[in-house]
Length: 271
Ligand SMILES: [Zn+2]
Image (cartoon, rainbow, N blue to C red; front, side, top):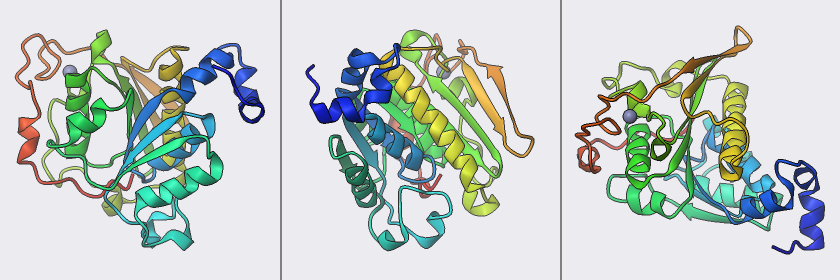
Protein backbone atom coordinates (compact mmCIF):
# COMPACT_ATOMS: atom_id res chain seq x y z
CA UNK A 1 0.00 0.00 0.00
CA UNK A 2 1.29 3.44 -0.92
CA UNK A 3 0.73 6.07 1.74
CA UNK A 4 0.09 9.69 0.92
CA UNK A 5 2.34 12.34 2.47
CA UNK A 6 -0.54 13.23 4.75
CA UNK A 7 -0.91 9.63 5.94
CA UNK A 8 2.82 9.24 6.59
CA UNK A 9 2.70 12.38 8.72
CA UNK A 10 -0.56 11.48 10.48
CA UNK A 11 0.49 7.94 11.40
CA UNK A 12 4.21 8.65 11.96
CA UNK A 13 4.16 7.56 15.64
CA UNK A 14 2.59 4.23 14.68
CA UNK A 15 4.89 3.64 11.74
CA UNK A 16 7.88 4.22 14.04
CA UNK A 17 6.87 1.24 16.18
CA UNK A 18 8.57 -1.91 14.84
CA UNK A 19 5.48 -3.93 15.83
CA UNK A 20 3.28 -1.73 13.64
CA UNK A 21 5.34 -0.14 10.88
CA UNK A 22 3.98 0.63 7.43
CA UNK A 23 2.64 -2.91 7.05
CA UNK A 24 0.67 -2.74 10.28
CA UNK A 25 -0.68 0.71 9.50
CA UNK A 26 -1.85 -0.52 6.11
CA UNK A 27 -3.53 -3.43 7.85
CA UNK A 28 -5.36 -1.04 10.19
CA UNK A 29 -6.50 1.07 7.24
CA UNK A 30 -7.91 -2.05 5.61
CA UNK A 31 -9.67 -3.29 8.76
CA UNK A 32 -13.40 -3.28 9.54
CA UNK A 33 -14.42 -3.12 13.21
CA UNK A 34 -17.96 -3.06 14.62
CA UNK A 35 -18.46 -1.12 17.86
CA UNK A 36 -21.73 -2.02 19.59
CA UNK A 37 -22.96 0.98 21.55
CA UNK A 38 -21.81 4.58 21.14
CA UNK A 39 -21.84 5.19 24.88
CA UNK A 40 -19.21 5.27 27.61
CA UNK A 41 -17.08 2.38 26.35
CA UNK A 42 -17.92 3.11 22.71
CA UNK A 43 -16.62 6.67 23.08
CA UNK A 44 -12.91 5.97 23.63
CA UNK A 45 -13.23 2.95 21.34
CA UNK A 46 -14.50 4.97 18.40
CA UNK A 47 -12.20 7.93 19.08
CA UNK A 48 -9.01 5.86 19.37
CA UNK A 49 -9.86 3.51 16.50
CA UNK A 50 -10.60 6.49 14.25
CA UNK A 51 -7.43 8.30 15.33
CA UNK A 52 -5.44 5.08 14.77
CA UNK A 53 -6.67 4.88 11.19
CA UNK A 54 -8.88 1.80 11.46
CA UNK A 55 -10.28 2.22 7.97
CA UNK A 56 -13.91 1.25 8.48
CA UNK A 57 -15.67 1.54 11.81
CA UNK A 58 -19.28 0.41 12.15
CA UNK A 59 -21.26 1.84 15.05
CA UNK A 60 -24.64 0.49 16.09
CA UNK A 61 -26.81 2.39 18.58
CA UNK A 62 -30.49 3.31 18.47
CA UNK A 63 -30.25 6.10 21.03
CA UNK A 64 -30.03 9.87 20.99
CA UNK A 65 -27.54 11.95 22.97
CA UNK A 66 -28.88 12.95 26.40
CA UNK A 67 -27.50 15.46 28.88
CA UNK A 68 -26.89 12.67 31.43
CA UNK A 69 -24.60 10.87 28.94
CA UNK A 70 -22.01 13.62 28.82
CA UNK A 71 -20.46 12.81 32.23
CA UNK A 72 -18.66 9.88 30.53
CA UNK A 73 -19.57 9.60 26.84
CA UNK A 74 -16.81 11.83 25.48
CA UNK A 75 -17.75 11.10 21.87
CA UNK A 76 -20.69 13.48 22.27
CA UNK A 77 -21.02 17.17 23.07
CA UNK A 78 -23.51 19.50 24.71
CA UNK A 79 -24.23 20.96 21.29
CA UNK A 80 -25.23 17.53 19.95
CA UNK A 81 -27.83 16.68 22.64
CA UNK A 82 -30.87 15.28 20.84
CA UNK A 83 -28.86 14.06 17.83
CA UNK A 84 -28.66 10.30 17.27
CA UNK A 85 -25.54 8.89 18.91
CA UNK A 86 -24.36 7.38 15.65
CA UNK A 87 -24.63 10.74 13.86
CA UNK A 88 -22.83 12.41 16.76
CA UNK A 89 -20.13 9.71 16.49
CA UNK A 90 -19.86 10.40 12.75
CA UNK A 91 -19.34 14.11 13.44
CA UNK A 92 -16.62 13.34 16.01
CA UNK A 93 -14.84 10.90 13.68
CA UNK A 94 -14.96 13.28 10.72
CA UNK A 95 -13.34 15.96 12.89
CA UNK A 96 -10.53 13.66 14.06
CA UNK A 97 -9.77 11.71 10.92
CA UNK A 98 -11.58 12.30 7.63
CA UNK A 99 -9.53 9.43 6.20
CA UNK A 100 -11.60 6.73 7.90
CA UNK A 101 -15.16 5.64 7.16
CA UNK A 102 -17.85 5.45 9.80
CA UNK A 103 -20.78 3.18 8.98
CA UNK A 104 -23.80 4.16 11.06
CA UNK A 105 -26.46 1.70 12.15
CA UNK A 106 -29.30 3.51 13.93
CA UNK A 107 -30.94 0.44 15.37
CA UNK A 108 -30.65 -2.09 18.17
CA UNK A 109 -28.70 -5.27 17.72
CA UNK A 110 -31.27 -8.09 17.63
CA UNK A 111 -31.42 -11.79 16.83
CA UNK A 112 -32.81 -10.76 13.43
CA UNK A 113 -29.95 -8.48 12.37
CA UNK A 114 -26.94 -9.66 14.42
CA UNK A 115 -25.51 -12.25 12.04
CA UNK A 116 -25.70 -10.02 8.98
CA UNK A 117 -24.32 -6.97 10.78
CA UNK A 118 -21.51 -8.72 12.62
CA UNK A 119 -20.75 -10.84 9.56
CA UNK A 120 -19.83 -7.69 7.66
CA UNK A 121 -16.93 -6.88 10.02
CA UNK A 122 -13.59 -8.46 10.93
CA UNK A 123 -13.88 -7.99 14.68
CA UNK A 124 -16.43 -6.79 17.26
CA UNK A 125 -15.93 -4.55 20.28
CA UNK A 126 -18.76 -4.82 22.78
CA UNK A 127 -19.58 -1.48 24.36
CA UNK A 128 -23.10 -2.42 25.41
CA UNK A 129 -24.17 -2.31 29.03
CA UNK A 130 -26.94 -4.87 29.25
CA UNK A 131 -26.83 -8.62 29.53
CA UNK A 132 -29.23 -9.57 26.69
CA UNK A 133 -27.08 -7.67 24.17
CA UNK A 134 -23.83 -8.98 25.66
CA UNK A 135 -24.95 -12.60 25.30
CA UNK A 136 -26.37 -11.99 21.84
CA UNK A 137 -23.02 -10.56 20.67
CA UNK A 138 -21.12 -13.45 22.25
CA UNK A 139 -23.31 -16.06 20.59
CA UNK A 140 -23.27 -14.36 17.18
CA UNK A 141 -19.47 -13.94 17.28
CA UNK A 142 -19.01 -17.63 18.10
CA UNK A 143 -21.39 -18.74 15.34
CA UNK A 144 -19.58 -16.48 12.84
CA UNK A 145 -16.05 -17.22 14.07
CA UNK A 146 -15.34 -13.57 14.87
CA UNK A 147 -13.06 -12.24 17.58
CA UNK A 148 -14.87 -10.30 20.31
CA UNK A 149 -13.17 -7.77 22.57
CA UNK A 150 -15.47 -7.24 25.53
CA UNK A 151 -15.48 -4.83 28.46
CA UNK A 152 -17.92 -3.90 31.18
CA UNK A 153 -18.08 -1.26 33.89
CA UNK A 154 -20.06 -0.48 37.03
CA UNK A 155 -19.40 2.06 39.77
CA UNK A 156 -15.58 2.04 40.16
CA UNK A 157 -15.06 -1.43 38.68
CA UNK A 158 -14.27 -2.68 35.23
CA UNK A 159 -13.48 -5.91 33.46
CA UNK A 160 -12.10 -6.83 30.09
CA UNK A 161 -11.42 -9.93 28.04
CA UNK A 162 -11.10 -11.15 24.47
CA UNK A 163 -13.11 -14.09 23.20
CA UNK A 164 -11.77 -16.06 20.23
CA UNK A 165 -13.60 -19.37 20.23
CA UNK A 166 -12.52 -19.99 16.62
CA UNK A 167 -8.96 -20.18 17.97
CA UNK A 168 -9.84 -22.42 20.91
CA UNK A 169 -10.43 -19.76 23.53
CA UNK A 170 -13.29 -19.57 26.00
CA UNK A 171 -16.44 -17.52 25.31
CA UNK A 172 -18.45 -15.23 27.57
CA UNK A 173 -20.79 -18.12 28.38
CA UNK A 174 -17.84 -20.17 29.67
CA UNK A 175 -17.56 -17.39 32.26
CA UNK A 176 -21.29 -16.76 32.77
CA UNK A 177 -23.41 -19.58 31.27
CA UNK A 178 -26.55 -17.45 31.13
CA UNK A 179 -27.69 -13.91 31.85
CA UNK A 180 -28.41 -13.13 35.52
CA UNK A 181 -32.09 -12.79 36.41
CA UNK A 182 -33.41 -9.40 35.36
CA UNK A 183 -32.96 -6.85 38.15
CA UNK A 184 -30.38 -8.92 40.09
CA UNK A 185 -27.41 -6.88 38.85
CA UNK A 186 -27.84 -3.11 38.93
CA UNK A 187 -27.20 -1.07 35.80
CA UNK A 188 -25.04 2.05 35.62
CA UNK A 189 -28.28 4.04 35.52
CA UNK A 190 -29.23 2.53 38.88
CA UNK A 191 -25.88 2.26 40.65
CA UNK A 192 -23.77 4.95 38.97
CA UNK A 193 -20.36 4.81 37.34
CA UNK A 194 -17.27 7.00 37.45
CA UNK A 195 -16.82 8.44 33.98
CA UNK A 196 -13.04 8.15 33.92
CA UNK A 197 -13.26 4.42 34.80
CA UNK A 198 -15.37 3.89 31.69
CA UNK A 199 -12.70 5.78 29.75
CA UNK A 200 -9.96 3.55 31.21
CA UNK A 201 -11.74 0.35 30.21
CA UNK A 202 -12.76 1.64 26.77
CA UNK A 203 -9.18 2.73 26.09
CA UNK A 204 -7.84 -0.69 27.14
CA UNK A 205 -10.45 -2.22 24.86
CA UNK A 206 -9.27 -0.07 21.93
CA UNK A 207 -5.70 -1.22 22.61
CA UNK A 208 -6.77 -4.88 22.55
CA UNK A 209 -8.75 -4.35 19.32
CA UNK A 210 -5.66 -2.89 17.65
CA UNK A 211 -3.45 -5.73 18.98
CA UNK A 212 -5.90 -8.31 17.59
CA UNK A 213 -6.05 -6.56 14.20
CA UNK A 214 -2.26 -6.45 14.01
CA UNK A 215 -1.72 -9.89 15.56
CA UNK A 216 0.85 -8.48 17.98
CA UNK A 217 1.57 -8.99 21.66
CA UNK A 218 -0.18 -11.31 24.05
CA UNK A 219 -3.91 -11.60 23.52
CA UNK A 220 -6.37 -11.19 26.38
CA UNK A 221 -8.06 -14.40 25.16
CA UNK A 222 -8.25 -16.76 28.13
CA UNK A 223 -7.66 -13.97 30.61
CA UNK A 224 -10.07 -11.67 32.43
CA UNK A 225 -8.64 -8.34 33.53
CA UNK A 226 -10.40 -6.86 36.55
CA UNK A 227 -9.99 -3.21 37.46
CA UNK A 228 -10.72 -1.86 40.94
CA UNK A 229 -10.27 1.85 40.47
CA UNK A 230 -10.96 2.74 44.10
CA UNK A 231 -8.16 0.43 45.23
CA UNK A 232 -6.05 1.68 42.32
CA UNK A 233 -5.20 -1.68 40.85
CA UNK A 234 -5.78 -4.45 38.37
CA UNK A 235 -5.81 -8.20 38.79
CA UNK A 236 -6.08 -11.02 36.30
CA UNK A 237 -8.07 -14.25 36.34
CA UNK A 238 -7.36 -17.11 33.94
CA UNK A 239 -10.32 -18.28 31.89
CA UNK A 240 -10.49 -21.75 30.41
CA UNK A 241 -12.92 -23.01 27.79
CA UNK A 242 -15.73 -24.91 29.55
CA UNK A 243 -16.34 -28.27 27.82
CA UNK A 244 -19.92 -28.07 29.17
CA UNK A 245 -20.47 -24.57 27.70
CA UNK A 246 -23.88 -24.56 25.95
CA UNK A 247 -22.36 -22.52 23.10
CA UNK A 248 -18.72 -23.48 22.54
CA UNK A 249 -18.57 -26.73 24.52
CA UNK A 250 -18.30 -30.26 23.17
CA UNK A 251 -22.09 -30.76 22.93
CA UNK A 252 -23.49 -27.33 22.21
CA UNK A 253 -27.22 -26.73 22.66
CA UNK A 254 -27.05 -23.20 21.24
CA UNK A 255 -26.57 -23.51 17.49
CA UNK A 256 -28.39 -20.40 16.29
CA UNK A 257 -29.77 -17.15 17.74
CA UNK A 258 -33.34 -18.37 18.22
CA UNK A 259 -33.16 -18.17 22.02
CA UNK A 260 -32.59 -14.43 21.66
CA UNK A 261 -35.55 -13.92 19.36
CA UNK A 262 -38.21 -13.59 22.05
CA UNK A 263 -36.02 -11.81 24.56
CA UNK A 264 -37.08 -8.33 25.58
CA UNK A 265 -34.85 -5.75 23.98
CA UNK A 266 -32.04 -4.69 26.23
CA UNK A 267 -31.84 -1.34 27.90
CA UNK A 268 -29.97 1.53 26.36
CA UNK A 269 -26.33 0.90 25.46
CA UNK A 270 -25.06 3.68 27.66
CA UNK A 271 -21.93 2.09 29.09
ZN1 LIG B 1 -18.18 -21.02 25.84
